[in-house]
Image: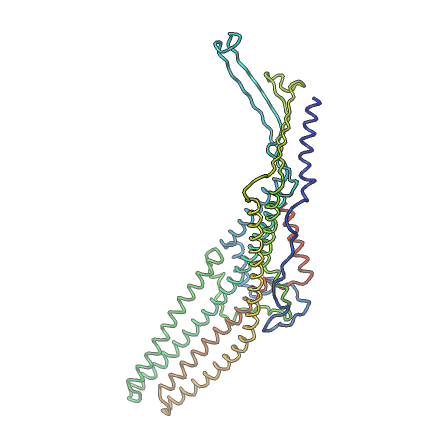
Length: 490
C-alpha cells in the first residue's frame, strides 16, 4: 500500500509540473507595430484632432425607428452573422482543447483477461484457465511543458479566438450599415417612384392640351408626337422604379433574414426618415485602432508571434510521462485487497539530435508568417485611414452638392413654369417647353440621389470609424467586456 501511495504522489507531482513551468515560453516579446500614419486626417471635416469624443453605437447614430427595427431583426436573423457567431464558438472550443493539453488527461480503466491452455500444451498435463482482473487510474503520454511549446500553442489558439470575435463585430458593423443603407435606398426609390408618377400625370395632362390644340389646328403633328414621347418616357420611369422598389424590398428581406410585412416596411420617403446623428468633429486617427478588422488583424499577428515560440521549443528536449495506479488480481473478490495494488511510472525524454534542418526551417517559416501578418496589419490600418479620409472629404463635397442641386431644382422649376406659360400663350415653341420640363424632372431626380448619397456617406463614415467613437470611459468599458468574455472562454 505504501508503494501505491508513492506512485500516486509521483503522479500528482507530474501533474503540478506544467502549472509551475507554464509561464515559460520561447515566443518573442510582442510589440505593437507603428503603421506610418499621420496623427490627423488628411482632408475633410474634423481634420484637426480634439479630445472628448463620446461613444456612439448604431442605436445613437440611427434615430429613425423603422430603420432601428429592421437592424435589430437583422442582428437576430441574418445568416452571415449567424455563421460568424458559430465560427466564434468553434474557435472558442478549439482554444479550450488546446488549453487542456497543459494538464494531464486522467482516465479510469477496468478490464478482465481470461485465457485457457489446453492439456497438451500445459506443463502439468492438465488444462489451465487463467483469469486476470484489473482496475486503475492514470494518464498516458503527457508532455511536461518545460519550454512552453504547448503554452505557445494555447496562446496562438487564444489569439485566433479573439480574432474571430473581432471578425464577428466587423460582420455586425457591416450588417448594420448595409441594412440602414438598404432602407434608405428603398425610401429614395419610393420617392423616385412618387416623382415619376407625378411627372406621368403632368405629361398626360400636357398631352391632352396638345391633343386639343392639334384638334383645333393650333398645334402641329410634330408637337403631338413630342407630347406622346414624354408620356411614354414617364411610363417607362414609373415601371422601372416600381420594379426597383420591389428589388429593394427583396434585398432587405435577405439582409434581415426573414420575410418583411408591410408593417415592417412603412411607406416612407427619404424626406420622412429622421436624420442620422452627425459625426463629432476633431476625432483623432487613433480611433482606427478600435476598428474590428484592425483588432482582428492584430490578434492574428499575436497568434503568429506565439507560433514562433512553439517552433523554437522544438529545439529543446520534450519529456513525456505515462503513469497509472490501481489493482490487479486473479479473483474479483481479491481485487481491492492490499497485496493487489499495482503502479507504473514511465518517464520518457526525447532530445532532437539530427532533423536535417527541419526545426530551423520551421522557426524561419513561423518568423516569415509573423512578418507577413505585420505587413497585413499595417495595410489594414492604412486602408482604414484612407476610408475615413475619403468619407470626410466627400462629406463637405456632398453638402455643397445638395445645396447646389436644391438651387438647380428650384431654378429648373421656375424655368419650366415660364416655358409652359409662353407655350400656352403661343409665344414659344413646344420644344423649348419640353426641354425645360426634362431639365426640371432631371434636377428633381438628381436632388433625391444627392440626398441619398449624403446620408449614405454618414453611414460609410460611421462604418469606417469602426462603429463608434470612443472616450476613455468607453474604452475602459469595452476592455472590461473583453476581459469578461476571455474569462468565460477560459
